[in-house]
Amino acid sequence: MKNDLDVLLVHPNASKKVYQDLSKSFSAYEQPIWAGMIASYLNNRGHTSNILDCEVNQLSHEESIQKIKDFSPKIVCLVVYGQQPSASAQNMHGAEKLMQSLKGLGMTRIYVGLAPSALPEFIISRDEEVLVCRGEGPRTIEALLQAKDSTDPTELEKIPGLWFYDWKKKEVKNAQMAPAIADLDNDIPTMSWDLMDMTKYRTANWHSWTNEVHPNNQNPFAALYTSLGCPYTCSFCCINAPFNDNGTIRNSFRHFSPQKIISFFDQIADFGITNVKIADELFVLKPNHFLETCKLIKERGYKFNIWCYSRINTLKEQYVVPLKEAGVNWVGLGIESGNSQVRQEVTKGRFEEVHIQDVINKARNAGICVTGNYIFGLPTDTYETMGETLHEAMTTEIDYYNGYSCMAYPGSQLHREWSEKDPDCLPENTDAGWLGYSQHSYECYPLPTKNLKNWEVLKFRDEAFLKFFTNQEYLDRMISKFGDSFKNEMNRMLEITLPRKIVEENSKNI
Image 1: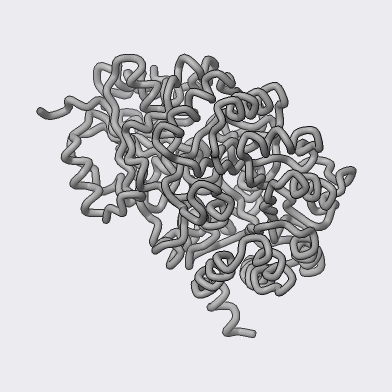
Image 2: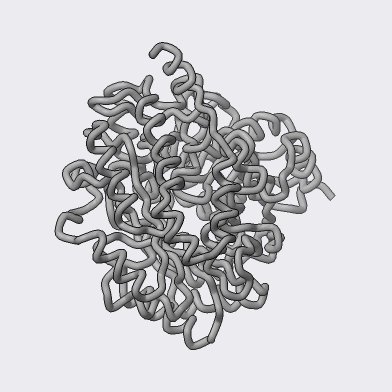
């Protein structure tokens, strides 16, 4: 029967374009967590919703359209998030292509996510019949379900958080953002894992190295949030776009209770899953939140292999043992730059008072591996300061390295600044399009700095990756830690090359 389903929440598939050859067997597949939480909210209120994960099921464009037709929902919602906050923009490539193909099928079409929250008017300018949510999504979708006519502007303007094109007045309109969900435990009682095939998801290769139960197995894998939002205002970060009306005010940071969180972990254990990612921007932040969660996991005796994130200055010595006892084997640290002045200028925080190597040593002494996250091409970066960043990464004995080129992600302060001073440097205003926001795509299009062109930043970033992972001191240290399986994994990873359009075009002129 047609339209029995109220809402179909769709995670699009653009992995081949976003990750190039990494998508074949290397990139992780993470559950669409936001889609799961929205489904939980809606189903808890008597509505009917389901999830279609086109990426993990490796559906082609045509197959995705057919699946959506088969569900025949009243509302099709493209939930545009990803494995990290920045992934929303790159996933807009697949989402927009899919959404365009759903025109005229009798479904109300709406976008939810970080990039849609940040750029609703821009997105509507490319498709005037589509609706866009600025905000978290659940309250907006629920109100849309209750509207008498989803094509009537007088009805649409009553829906909190909704942006739309008023075909009568020939202009884009919007309602005030919906209030953020305050009672997470009751309003989002589950992660809706029953709507996903949990056997298909896989974690990052390095995360699997510390899995004692299933060594080196990347799947199965589960990801969850224990909190939403972030209290900080780093200029390069876009995580608060759905919470603060695309400004710097109203940043939202809310937690599930430890009792609710342990119920999620109980479900994960029932699935037989040991690889777990706590996807919070900062899990190690509020001690009464994460320490109680760790205590409850330890009491259960689970053998999880957990990965989470922390700030350098919040990973204190008294926390590392409780984290390890709960199964936290990896902590991702946002180190960003090896130059303290460059780091402070992007408002990440005053880390000059924290000795980074000391923090890493504390984690390592407790048996926790450290992933260092670095950014090349921050606003005042030069070749020299980027060299300092690479040097720090190679000498602080981290266990894994992520190097990113600086992007002005939609919803970030950097994006607002560049939108005013030079919008042509933003990917969505160039031939690169949404794929320009992918760190791994052929079209990757980072920002220039005051001293360097964007292709110079990207070229440095890619060369830094090779220098780090071919550094013999690092390889010897990690082989002694993980054995030949690490060496084999490095060989497999280094076989994959990522061609870059802007580097190819500009290198010819040197």
